[in-house]
Every structure is written in C-alpha cells, then in structure tokens.
Length: 403
Ligand SMILES: Cc1cc2nc3c(=O)[nH]c(=O)nc-3n(C[C@H](O)[C@H](O)[C@H](O)COP(=O)(O)OP(=O)(O)OC[C@H]3O[C@@H](n4cnc5c(N)ncnc54)[C@H](O)[C@@H]3O)c2cc1C
Picture 1: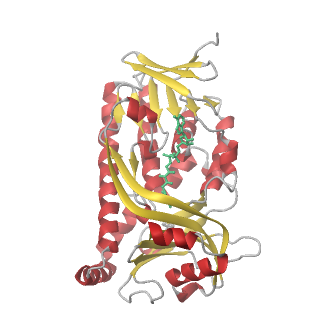
Picture 2: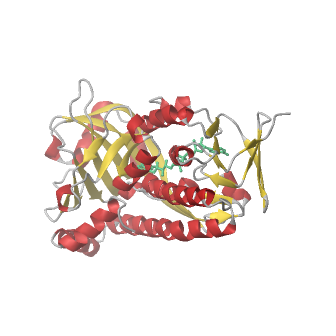
Picture 3: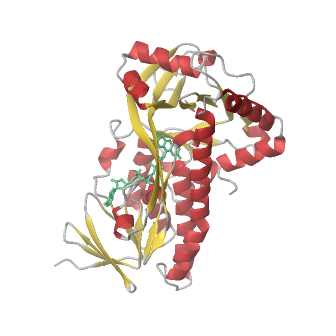
C-alpha cells in the first residue's frame, strides 16, 4: 500500500484555471496536489487547442504571481485599442462605432493575446519547479468528502488526504455533479470558429469586434511569425449550418469569407494553420461550493466568448480562492471550512452571474435583425463613444480592474 499524501488542497483538473491555481497556491507556500485525467505534455502541441486568449490586465497579475507569465514562450501581443462596430459581411462597418484607446484608461494595454498552447508550455515548465506541489497526470480520482476532510483515491493506487478539494475539471465537472449542484444552461445554436490569418497591412495592435447579423466576429492582434509579419487571431460566431459550410471550404474560399467579415482595413487576408470550431453554450452553477468543495473556472461558469472573458473570469476565481486559502493557512485556520467557502462564494458568484447575464444580453442585442434594434444599438454604440465616463466604465471591466 502507498503512504497517503497529505496536502491542504487537492485540485481536480489541470487546465489553464486549475494549473494556475495550483501554481499560485504552491508559490504561496500551500502544500497542494493537482490531478488531471489527461497527460499534460500533449496539451502543448499545436493540434491540441487552436484558441488564443485575450488575457486581461488582472489575469496577467495572477499569472505573474503564479510565476507563469515569465515562462511564456515568445512575447504576448499587447492590445492597445479596441474598435467596436455594427455591420454586415461585405459591407463597410457602420460609421457609428466605438473606439477604446488604452491611453484614455490606465495607459496599460487592455490585454495581451496569448495562444492556448503557449500558456500550456508555461504551465508545464512552471509546475515541476514548485516543491509544495505534486502533479498526477494522467490519473482518475474517486473522491470522498466529509466534514472532517477529503480522501482522493487515484487510479494508480495513491491516496491523497486534503482539507479542501477544488473542482477545475471544466464544464462537465464530475465533482459538481456528485455534489448535486444544479446548473442553468443556454444553447446559442452557433459554432465559434477560431484560427489565425495573415494579412497584408499591420494591425497596429488594434482589436476589432464586428457585430454581424449571425453573431460577433473578432479580429485580435497577434505577433507576426516567420514568413507572415502581420497576423491576427479570429473568433467568428456563426449559425451552425453556415459555419459547417465555411469550415468545409478550401483555403482560398474560406479566406474570402473571413476577409468579407474583417472588412478592408487589413488588405488581403490568407488563413494560416488549422481551423477550429467549438459549439457555443453557456452555463452557470447554482452554488460554487459544497462541503469541503470549491468550484473554479468553467466548472462553475461557462459564458459566450463575445467579450473574450471566460478564462479571465476563471482567473478571478483563482485569485479570490488563493487569497482566502493562503490567509487561512497563515492564520492556522481551516482552508476547507464552511466560513472560508461562504466567503469564496460571496466573492465570486455575483461576478460569474453578472458576466453570464451581460454576455447573454450582448449576444441577444447584437444578433437581432429587427431594424429598430439595429438602429438603437448603432446609436447606443455612438453614444457610449461620446461619453468618456461610460467608456472608462466599460474599458475597466474589460481589463478586469473593477467589478
Ligand atoms: C471559441 C472560444 C473562444 C474563447 N476565447 C476566450 C478568450 O479570448 N479569452 C478568455 O478569457 N476565454 C476565452 N474562452 C473561454 C476559455 O476557453 C475557457 O473559459 C477556459 O478554457 C476554461 O478553463 P478551465 O481550466 O476552467 O477548463 P478547461 O480548459 O475545460 O480544463 C479542464 C481540465 O480538466 C481536466 N479534466 C476533465 N475531467 C476531469 C476529471 N474527472 N478529473 C480530473 N481532471 C479532469 C481536463 O483534461 C482539462 O485539462 C473561449 C472559449 C471558446 C469556446
């Protein structure tokens, strides 16, 4: 029999949220373990995930504190401006648009574009350096929670004893399901198409969010690569049938569809690398905690990518939970006790609910084809552009600086 491993916190799920929480807790001197059903090295490979994240300023601070930001390969591309416009494919963007300039807010970039696989490279480099952290992947876990503590039995035969177990296993969280926590779900009946494109003209670190009739289309600035000095990531929301047709097109025809949605400002557009697609749904857990259990990231909430905030919301969970756990351990208190869990839920659930509501309303408002709604949103966009206080309000929220 293996000797049980005793830790303060055991995290199930070493995705971007769970692995960052593990690194942050271990960097703060908390003994912890992280378990994932999948092996971690293949998550670095280009074939694993095509997403690129817009990492907000508040998330960068979490990654800095976890020692992950400095381990990123390459330099993340800063977003210095965001242009929001209403339009139709092939049409010029509406002249009633909204422009955010970083110099008008804090002077810091709005965020940095980081490829999902680059974040994985940094996490995989960081986790083995932390003496307080034990990593088990691939491994499956059977979890028994009780008032006295948590026992996690791994498929390898290793037992782990912890005072808190964290569910970071993504949207289908088995820990959440075993705790009987109900979930509200929304289906947008759309696919999110993601990928990279090279373009003729520079992006000048500007992101563009076009609200098209079938959903938002975002062009996000990336660092250039060899042979392609000007590169952007795209996140394109499209109705299922159209999306499937576009995904099946050859490169030249697909590039024309992308170019019609980007508008003419970047010149000729060429797709590079693979195309990826994700069904777009949203979900929210009725509670973020149960006995000796806390949920973080997509295990607690999944939102529409309209504002690129899903992972940022998860990093805010990480910051709040790590702060509470580190303070409890330093004070000799129980890191999995009901008082700490109540404080975590009170700190995080309103933000999750607000982001779910805001992204849902935005999605509804900006996909409406009704002419009065279209006119109202164009006027609304133009009105916000002329009100510096309101612009600052929206910009600070996008940067994760205020809630
Ligand atoms: C098209 C699209 C674009 C997006 N763009 C952005 C963006 O620009 N910015 C942004 O902030 N967010 C974005 N998001 C959202 C973001 O991708 C998610 O919020 C993020 O991946 C959630 O991370 P996570 O670690 O919580 O969960 P996941 O990434 O789902 O990771 C879960 C981990 O748990 C493991 N696991 C599963 N089951 C178990 C188990 N039983 N035991 C142990 N481990 C298990 C899995 O192997 C995985 O490693 C986007 C989403 C989509 C769909």
